[in-house]
Image 1 (cartoon, rainbow, N blue to C red):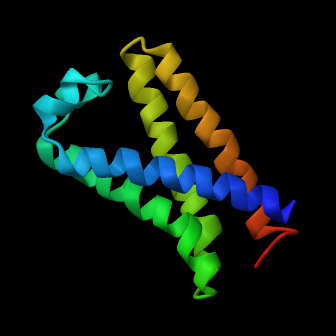
Image 2 (image 1 turned 180 degrees about the vertical axis):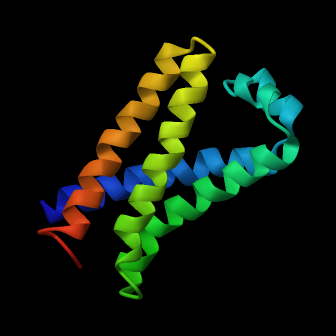
Image 3 (image 1 turned 45 degrees about the vertical axis):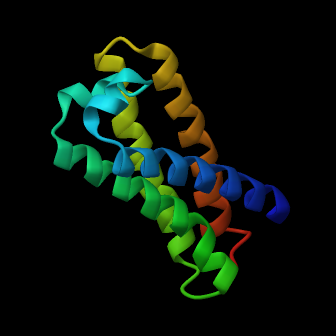
Length: 124
């Protein structure tokens, strides 16, 4: 189970860092042309802040466990990721983007498994 948690963590971390990095590095107009149409409803600052939180959650899923420095941050990062993905689901559902909301629910399920495992029987 520990290996499976690491696989989930790596997949989630890569996803959060890549998507967060895109939100940070690209401007809102460029993001709106791709799969990030929701950015039109938010300010530039909000989009960059969401991107920063995504990157921090992604790093928090891997670095504390890999370095053995404050490993309790890993399940906390998973909980933060659940909040981010939950907020994303709400935004997508309000925009009638059910397929994108389902992707966020997929992330929420995996993050919940990581939080359960790292808080519970498979702590570092």
